[in-house]
Image (cartoon, rainbow over all chains, first blue to last red; front, side):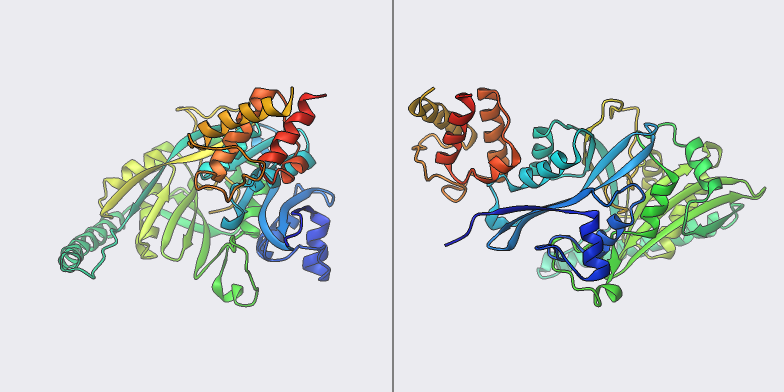
Length: 358
Length: 81
């Protein structure tokens, strides 16, 4: 006989008791939130100890659905406090019971009247947020990658040979690009935080951005990425469906300078295994060729197999390089409840905007 | 509004949302009763009910909606206020 489902929530103070004092409140474990994600939320510069940040439903003491959220005060729209939903999971055997709506709805009730965001939600998730009064819009994400070929069939084997020849051609193209762009006069500085110079540059070159994060929020995301790579993970047991873990995870923040030592571009990218994602990109229009070229150089030097971006100008430029055999465009959802914004054709979303730095 | 009337209206909504013309109402109908009772359809079902009867389910209330019988009882409770 199964018992009644139980709805629970956890505050920042609860996360601290669990992670730092090994005194988890009943039900709180890595099954509903990965420790690195909990650690990041605990250290979010905007949270208070009493804020509810995790909600979960348990059936027979096992997690059936859960979600988490964190707050952020935005630079644009100035001073607006918004909550990002960062995970939403319902186990398949509990589907169709409205659990997703209940866990998200509970956090909204606890947070109270406010502004909410959700990025890249699946169909059910979008419906949940619509039900809670959020507006759902879509924007474009570009992905350039290699084709995956199944070599088990004869056709596959022939395609593999054809693709291998094509890869040689692409490699020659990359080599030629590196040779050609080596003469460009610029240099790079890598950093692990957004300093005042970098942030002033962001503000100056983000006119079309729908949202701009505060400097301290960007630095929080850089300091506490929700993702960790497997060498660390092997020491941290994670059973959650959102382990935020991969074999290899790297995050870079790069400043581009011209020969006069002026900053002309700033971008961040992450490498998740061999997948390159351009998280943020800001640049002086007069130096777009230099900045874009340096990103392409990074793509080549890290031997990445794919690149994703929401930046249309960069996507068009990169597509013309013909470095990859497959070019795709996806519509990515952005649900929001905030009166002062409207996602339209004239506003853009950066790949890094969202619940995680991915 | 009596229970029979609500059952009749809820059945109509369920047939449309769950795309199941032959749906026969019973109090025990739940998420495991048929394939088209998906998360997405259930969300739409709740939205239709809230729109039709002019109230919003509280989250704790949703947790108790284990089957059609509980949903009808909840509608009766809200509409009798």
